Length: 468
Ligand code: NDP
Image (cartoon, rainbow, N blue to C red):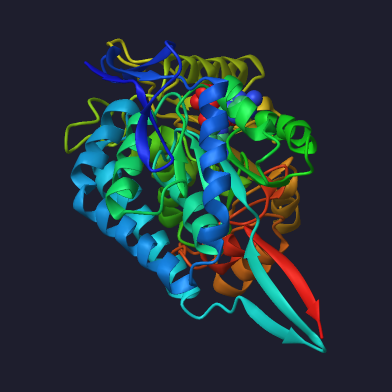
């Protein structure tokens, strides 16, 4: 078992001033695979001080120089992609196939997408008699969750660093090993000291202290809406900017005449891959009432060959949940669904074996006011809701406190029409692929700000007007 007792700040791995450790668990067999030190408040102070000291020089480097460092980081990820994927299989429980073909390539594509857009970005422009200057804010605190342990960090630090900020990252307690590899890659890329800093430790202590720190200018958080709401108070200490990417309860709207197989496959994939621990997962499948029976057949057919099991095996689609807590949360939601009168069409149980495995679960007889249709479950659970008219479908889709993502499958014109009416930050129409250059982020309680491409960059840029 590995012990990680160092933190990365001021350009090197430094002894933590703490004897407190958290366990990293292999979620498939419940064994402790590593112990990782929890940074003390003193450690956080030093990491923030290093980031603050590095800011001016980094903010004044040329955009081309900053882009070169990001390219080197991308190359470092490419070189270590098998090791990164294996680490995610162990600490997150992502299936090997999804880690290798989903998680890692997503990070590489998104970094490249941002770099491509960045090439032509103007940090200065003229408006009337003013020169408008865009530059970094200062120190950005990045608090990241466990579901995409590399990409959640990447989505923050790529734009933040390109914009001229320096960063202190507090990764999720469940998945710090991927973050540590990321820090090693950044060390190897040779960024000036203090530009990137990593402090492991729990969000409720290390993350909380970091996001209140008076020398932090921007707090960038991805995680639950509950924690996101609490960060307003932390940000208020010194009027920090907040960038929030929070939860979702996204609808897949199937319209008569569309490709039902595509609708089912697209929604199901998002709740099967990564065990449904994806903020943009299409967890509510809306179908016309008279298409329910056909939908059930298509679902049954799609689910019959899905293998749940050891995430390290090539043919496994669904691995274990990230933690015992997350597994229990999902099982509780399944029970609530049953108690509120929904019908378990498929699955519904924990697997009788070691590890935090849950059967892929599909509920029918669900109405949109039920808890399982309103709250983010973050597990392999799909709910099927029926509707009578297209207007009703749109109403149900938008009847949510979240607004992160959505999808429509149907005849093209109608599908586009419904897509425009959805109150969500992203909508996929008839399976359209998501571009890494396009913005990602949510309406309503799904967050504030956007990630990816130039939209992500803008969130990390201060704007100054010089009048001549
Ligand atoms: P949290 O929101 O609690 O955790 C996300 C990150 O925030 C973790 O790094 C966590 O640290 C950190 N954190 C927790 N409390 C604080 C705090 N007070 N100040 C600063 N940082 C903090 O999510 P959970 O892991 O508990 O998951 C619960 C639910 O949240 C899921 O079921 C899902 O619905 C949602 N979620 C949404 C995600 C998304 O991508 N939008 C990602 C993850 C979860 P630590 O790791 O130490 O707990």
